[in-house]
Amino acid sequence: MPSVDICFSPELLPLYNLQGRVAVVVDILRATSSMVTALAQGVTYLVPHSELDPCRAMAAEGYLTAAERDGVQADGVDLGNSPFGYLDGVVPVRGRAVAITTTNGTRALHLSAAAEHVVVGAFLNLGAVAEFLRQQQRDVVVVCAGWKGMFCLEDTLFGGALAARLAPGFDTTSSDATLAALDLWQAASSNVAGYLLKSAHVRRLNHLEAHKDMEFCVRQDVYDLVPVFRNGKIIVAQ
Image 1 (spheres, rainbow, N blue to C red):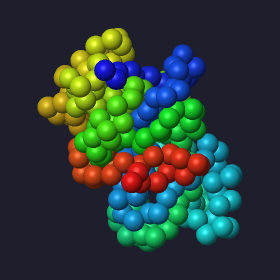
Image 2 (image 1 turned 180 degrees about the vertical axis):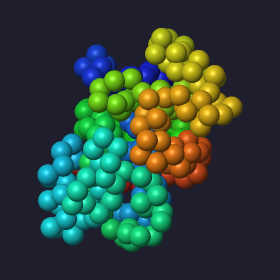
Image 3 (image 1 turned 60 degrees about the vertical axis):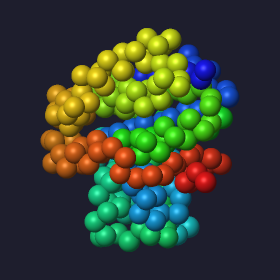
């Protein structure tokens, strides 16, 4: 039986063997939620960068550029890190490719590249990700992007939600990290947005007047697609 494990921070990834496994990278607030939304709105693919300058430079090649640092849109780019940037129509995105860099999420993607498959997970595509994993029948490691290397409540909640969806067909009891995430999910699942009001990252977003982003990013099963990071690009799995 395949198993589900949860890595609470990219800083802990050296302790995990990703070979032959599926890494589900999650940055609920907001990178992976925005990536899922972008592809659902017709973006052809995304190229994630760990640093700002290479991302900005791709504008010269015809890419839209999206960049965020410390929750704020970076200077000199088309989009920030809000999913509403792909929904509000201010910047037309359908049919475009996007170069993207964020404080936490894009770094976590690159650090997970040793996995057999690297999946972009969010509450927005939770059911689609769970079905993809059932089809793969491989061990799963949920890689929480966290905040600058530290634990993040919302990413761990996603890990618990995903483990709950995969049980009993996956082993969700052998890892203490997974058990902890399941307990958190049980406590939060009836009102995820309300539960997260106490989280540090939600307080950061509220300070930036981005509360509507949080409410959107915790909606479940909005999109039926699974983005995968492959050959340097995030594309929709076929």
